[in-house]
Image (cartoon, rainbow, N blue to C red; front, side, top):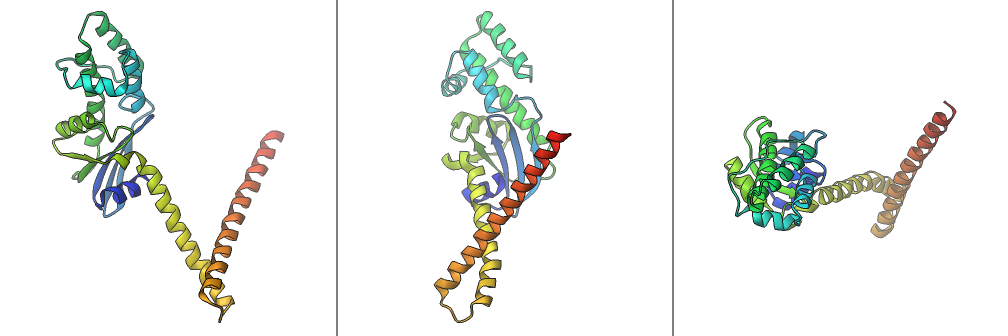
Length: 231
């Protein structure tokens, strides 16, 4: 869904999607509109929106305020990839009197390095980079990624909805396919009727098919549930 949504948003069939979400970070390599390779971070929250949110709270800042401060900082690093240990490092830096802008820079730099390491694990040549997810409108993140990867990273205000847009497009394609099958069946059964009547019957067949599919899944779920109770 993310791949389909990104292709639709950026109108490019070849993309490398960097999706920084709240709980995970995904790198999706797309060629000719199809997913060629895919990598997602491990169970650790490092390099995700959650990591940045925790660090911002530790600094008593909002995420956007932390990004603005990071522009002014330099020469400080956070070595820990684990969110818990990184938070301890940040607390230690605060205790030593390190300027907040330097700590903010280190937090963002840690995330950028984590994402860049994921990108380096992808096979083949990287196509146009695009940033999706909750940080798509953060200009500093986009600029820092571009600098680290040595190639411009593009984005869009609507890129945070890439997954939802892709899901909607997938559902639309499914509906068209179902109508193509069942609408044709309706036409065969009702020759001589007008187009609107055939269209209505086609939609009815599609709806009936979907309803029966969900009913079957629900019954299957109940059978499994009852079986587990008696085990």
